[in-house]
Structure formats: structure tokens, C-alpha cells
Image 1 (cartoon, one colour):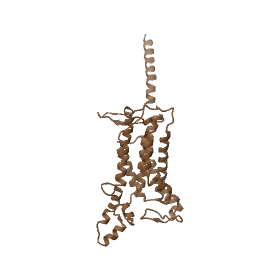
Image 2 (image 1 turned 180 degrees about the horizontal axis):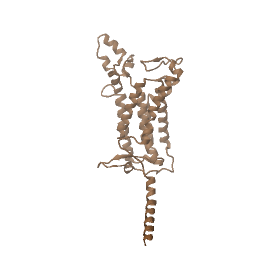
Image 3 (image 1 turned 90 degrees about the horizontal axis):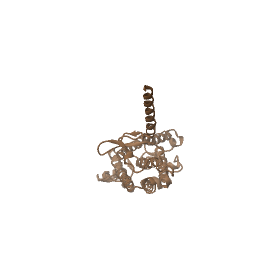
Image 4 (image 1 turned 30 degrees about the vertical axis):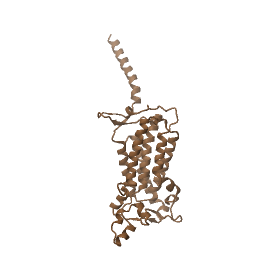
Length: 309
């Protein structure tokens, strides 16, 4: 009798183990709702890595080190005969057609993806994604374009002692208000130049923010759709409970595992992200000081984390 009971108990425990093992093997690792997930941390490491590599390359490269540098323009001299690289010239086609219109490219890539990828067919999901785009675009606009007057980049330059060279001459002739009203665009349009202060890199901000935004929007959707990565973020529910983001998902994990993962919209977004990363590296090598690039990259990380929260 005892032997029979022991055998029955052992069989029951073995059966429970077999039943539990699939759920354990398919359980999704959860991350803090207030911190980047392991995958997000790996992606964010890309940006400081590019800045560090670019800075080191600019120091050890004989061509870059020997090329004359204009500290006012924050770039090497633009004469092709002395410029260390095609990408060191502001007139290069990628800078003119891509970086100068960077946020337009980011926006087009984002909307092409959410309106073409099968994982984002739900109207509510598209609305939420569009609201996140509005939040990030507002951040970009306030920092680089206008913030109840001059943009934050222009204000930062002024706060660190920078002036428009043309405005300085106006002050000498009796006008002490011109310099306070000029932005970087207005200063250059009037024939002046920013001088002094820290002209924080708007290109680093744009390229980093845009790439990080697309990585979040495209990456998570594609990975969940294809079922290629079993990782989820925790979310805080209205009652304060911490649950997996699965509870608010409109699609199941691996729903599109038998179909192409990226699609046309995803491929276009990946192309925009790749070119943005390349131009970020070129900026790190040939433009601005190390301090200015780090400050702007740090601002982006703070903004991305705030948007995720």
C-alpha cells in the first residue's frame, strides 16, 4: 500500500513537472517599467559607441588631424583641396538632402511603417503611435526650431557666452538689443557667425533622437510580430499593479512568424536608421567638439526614457 501511494505521488509530481515545463520555457523575461529593457540598453549603447569611435578616429587619423579646423564654424575648412574627407564638407549630398531634412525622413519612415506593416493594422495602435510621434516631434521642435522665442540650442549657446559676431559690431555702434534677438539662422542670414559659447550639435540631437525613436517603434513591433525575441517591458496598470505589456498588446507573440518580418515599410525604416547612424559617425569625426556632442546625446537619452515612461 505504502509503495503504491509513493508511486502515485511520484507520478503526480512528474506529471506536474511536465505540465509546468512548457509555461516556464515560454515565460517572458520582464523588465522594470522605469528602466530600458536589455534589448533597449543594447540599442542605446550604439550612440555613445559611435561618438567615442568617431572622436578617437579624428584624433588618430593623420588626414583629419592635419586638416585645418575652423572653431567658429565647428568644422574643417570646406575647401575640397584641404578637406580631410568628402563627408567633412557640409555640401556633401547626404548632408544636404538627408541630414538637413532629417526629421522629414524620420517622419516619412515612421508613418510608412505604421500604415503598411501588418502588426500595426489596429486603429487604436496607430493612434497611440501617432501620439508618441507628436511627443517626440514636439521635443525636437522645441530644442532645434523654436521654444517661445529662440530654440533651446540657441538659448544654450547664448547662456554659455556665445554671441553673433554681427550683433557684437552693432553693440559697438550703440544697439544693445540685436544680439539678444538673433537666432543661429537669423545670425547666419544676416551674414554673421556664432562665436564663443557652446554651439551644441543639432545634428547629433536630430540623428540620435530620430534613430532611437524608429528603433523603438519599428523594433518592438517587428520582433513581437515575428516572435524572434521573447522579451517584454512591464507596465504600470491603472490600479498600480505591475503586469507584462502583453496584457495591452493587440497582437499575439509570433503571430506573423510565417510571413516576412520587416515588409516594405520596415525595410525603408531600417534604411533611414542605417543612414542616420552613418551620418552620426561622420558628425562625430568631422564636426563639433566632444563636449557639445556628449551634451546633446545625453539630452536625447533623457527624452527617449521620458517618452517610454
